[in-house]
Length: 195
Image (cartoon, rainbow, N blue to C red; front, side):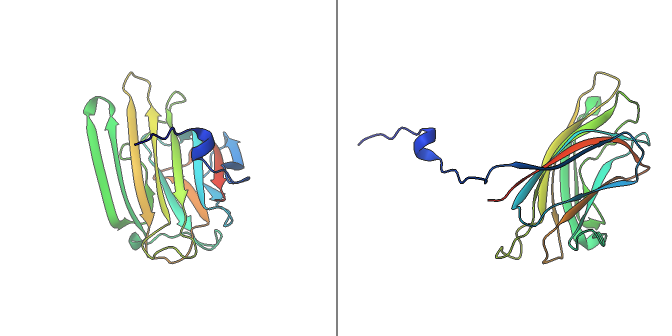
């Protein structure tokens, strides 16, 4: 029996223009209630990198709502979101939080971020919209990971997974907001893949 040596050349097919492309980016140090980011419908999936985010209110948590009509409205019914997050909250150990059709938002973290300039957090969020031909239970999902800073030595990391439910339409916009107060500072870049 022979052997096959896998190499990049004989194992990978690359279609020109099929890799991640930068779609948009922004940075702001002005308090805003929310940040709306368009998810162009000609992309198959997205990666949103939040290089830094700082809440105006101490202990606030980052949340999201999605739109299926270009941002004219955002899904806010408790039937629209199922999600779970897991993490380590510094010296208090690990945690798991799960909400199945129980909230009007998609959750990313259980414990909030501090508002001191040395605090805040970072997130990487992958978004897979529902596309034509997808099974009714597929798509409009998000997952990712992140961590938050504090002024002490405790590390707080987390991962999260969720789905936008009760809609047969593609999500085409995401709204980021804190559960309490404004976003005082944010820097993000949205990437997308067409294939």
